Length: 193
Ligand code: HEC
Image (cartoon, protein in one colour):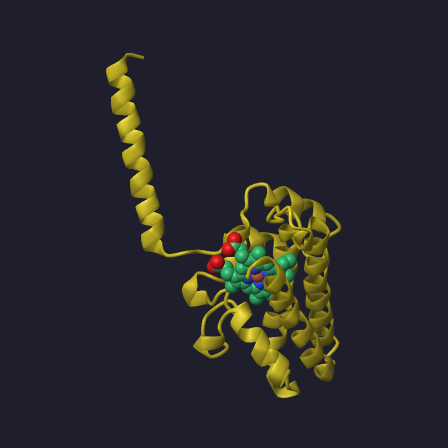
């Protein structure tokens, strides 16, 4: 390759990169919805942990966490389509406080039970993938062990919530939702702020 080809090639590459970065910025931030959703569907499989570990190789923490944002901001919504819950609650992060305050009534369970169980499986996929995405730190308060412990609390919260909904233990729904919700803030107060 001569110098001229190199320069032209380099320029094209630089331009190409700029255009794709621009396209990404214009699209807005997106969660890693497709790979996480595929994993969530296998949350009960024996190979779940192994598959999440493999998938984590090509995922990053920020877009994985961004999946918790509302549907309109590029995150998972509640249910397959918008409209099941009010628009300002149509995301995992936004819906959890409502669920911990109001719980689930037997009357609403018909339309909300399956979407909430699907949400829990998505949380499990996010947590299992996040196990491998520890934001490395030399501070002892931000150790890998602390990260795994906090993630584990998120997993237990999601499993309890799923269990409460599927066994129609509506009193338990409130409790489990609030436990899951505090797992988010507990980790953020250590690793994010
Ligand atoms: C084990 C630790 C941990 C747990 C548990 C956790 N998070 Fe996070 N979260 C983080 C960290 C660290 C960041 C910052 C990531 C970054 O910006 O790179 C973050 C970022 C976020 C963001 C911002 C993403 C963006 O767009 O930049 C949202 C939203 C979020 N988390 C929601 C949640 C919710 C909801 C839960 C609970 C269901 C949760 N998180 C549980 C560690 C955690």
